[in-house]
Structure formats: C-alpha cells, structure tokens
Amino acid sequence: MNKSNILFKATSLLLVVLALLSVKGIQAQSNNVVTIKQPTGDVQVKKNPKRVVVLDLGSLETCYELGIPVVGVLANVKQFMPEYGDATKYTVAGNVPKANIATVAQLKPDLIITSNRQRAQHDSLAMIAPTLLFGTETENFWSTFEANVRSIASIFEKEKLAGEKLAALRKKKDLVKAKAKADPKKTVVAMHINGRFNPSGPNSRFGFAYDVLDLKPAYTPEPAPERESAPQQGEQTQRQRVQAPSLESINPDYLFVFDRATGIKGEMPVWTDLLNDDVKKTKAYKNNKVFLLPGSIWYLSGSGLLSVNKKITDIGEKLYGIKF
Image (cartoon, rainbow, N blue to C red; front, side, top):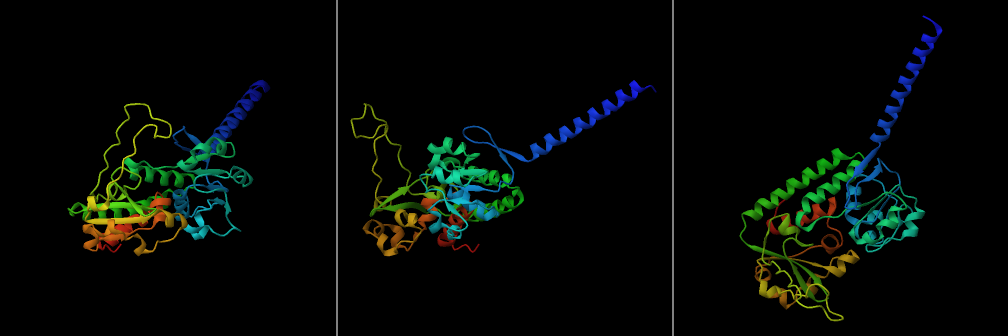
C-alpha cells in the first residue's frame, strides 16, 4: 500500500471519528434541553436550572411538592407558604400583580416562571432569562393543571414523582365525584367581599367544585347582554354590569364561602363576621350546610399541587365526610 493510500484512509478515519464526536455532542446538547409549549410559542429551557425565580403561587406550590429549589419568590408567599419566608434563603422579587424587574435581574436567574397576572411584563422578564407562563383554563381546568405540573417536572427531571402525585389527586377527585354524582342537592361557592357575597357558577374562576368535582350548581350566571350603542364616558366599554342575585334568592342546599380580604392576608376570617342575613335565609344555613374555605387557596392561588389537593380534601371532608 503506497503512502498516499495510507494517508487517505487515515484522513477518512479521522473525519469519521470527528463526525461521530460531533453528533454525540449535538445529542448531548439536545438531551440537556426541554421544549415547553407556551401561548407565545415554544421556549427552549436547559434542564435542571440552578437559579429559578417563581412569580406564580401555583407553580411555587408545585416546585415545593416536587423538591425543586428556588431563589426568588413573591412577597405574598410569606402568608401563604411560610416555608419561603426566610429572607436569608429567598429573595422577594415582586408581588402577585407585578414583578420587580430590577430585583429579578439582580438574582441572575436561569429560569423565570410567571402567571397571567404579570403577562404585561413577560417581554421584559424574557430579556433576563427564559420565561414561562403557566395558567389554567376555566373551561378546561384539570387538563391544563396537569399539563403545567408535567411541564415543570420535565424541566427538572421529576416526571416520575409528578406522575405519582397527579395519580393520587385523580384518585381523591374521583372519590368526591362519585359522591357528587349520587347527590341531587345543589351547591353555591361564593366569595365574600366588603360585606356582600358574589356567587360563582360553572366555567368560572371559582368553578372548581362544579367543573372538577361535579357538584350540581344552584346558580348559573346569565351571559351579560351586549351593548347596542357606544358606551358613554365612565361606562363599561363592552358589557353591561350584571348584578349577581342574593344567596337568599338562589337558596342553595350547600354553601361554600371564602373571604377575599383575609385570603390576601393569609388568614381565616372570623366565622360569625360572614354570617349575614343573606346567608341565614338559605336552606344551607338552616340545615347546617354552610362551610368556610380558605381564601388563600380559593382566591390567591388555587392551581398548584398543594392548593388543588386542599380544594379536593376540603370539599370531600366537609360535605361528604370522606377520610382521605
């Protein structure tokens, strides 16, 4: 074999080796990145980021349950999840409606998780680090909730643990649904705000009891009528405000109430402060079927592993005496 053939074969072998190494490098890089589908398009996130800022309470619950460390949280979390109240470990990076962009930048995060409440700041946050927004759909709560949990788990390679926790929640949910299916009585979930109650119906922000647990609604709001003429200054621009009916007129068999103000503070209200005449005239009150729910779960958060578990447990135990 002449020298030119030897040189040619050696060069060819070297090129093959380099090509294989290159492919392996590309595969390793690909295996280290996860693609998360978002409303604005796919976002590429490196797996197992070390510095995570979480500006969404539901996502923070999920991180806690999956053992995912974070460095930045919301101010409101101290009342809701005291585990994150240690200022030496966790930096406050904003509050529920608004992130502190400067503080987030100072934390030098590898990943930022936000909610719909900070949607207007998404582009500014995305300039600092990959930014994900996890929300739930009122008409499709459970599937979007599960998708959010699985997305977070995939970033941190916690898929197995997430699957186990979701399976446990589905089992609890199905126990309550079975009881609700056989129960003809009707329910209202109402938020207390400034001395009055706002009842909720199916496919709404507070429709979990009906949409997920299949409790029969005593109240379904009528769609607000469209305006036929242009609104005058100071009037609502698209839809007329519709006054919600009183609890007395709805007269539910079961009544679940939560207080907005104490929910924000992370406290339970004084029970007797909520028992106004509107409540006392219902069948639910007369039959001792009025139940108090934590506002921090039902108003402030509500879409993470902890709060979904709490919602199912509260209704199952209070209404049907289920021992989970």
